[in-house]
Image (cartoon, rainbow, N blue to C red; front, side):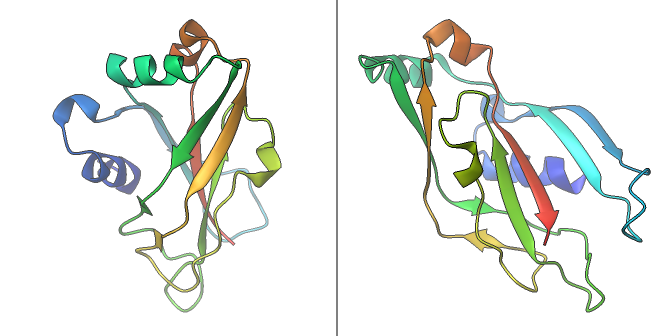
Length: 142
């Protein structure tokens, strides 16, 4: 298992909530870094109870996704001092202001914890579209 899958499975308590890794690999064609960045794609199950809660808030056809308690463990050391300066970028296809979907940089750590709360505003999301949609997290070293 990759460090990305360990991160996601540790963060989610119930086995039915655990994500399934769809793809994992390294990007070898980036020539500006001595490291090969890794990526992982996960299928994260959405329970019906969460979808029903979200449907109640869709009267205005505008919803919000609130993200809290982000943590990573055992990230790859990307800096010369043996640490990284991680930041997480969110990607959601219905976000109203996608440029705001980024965490602060946590300097010099391999086990970052973000105490921020992130609110992603979603526009025009109907329940069937929400079920077929995704939220991706990209963890990079700044």
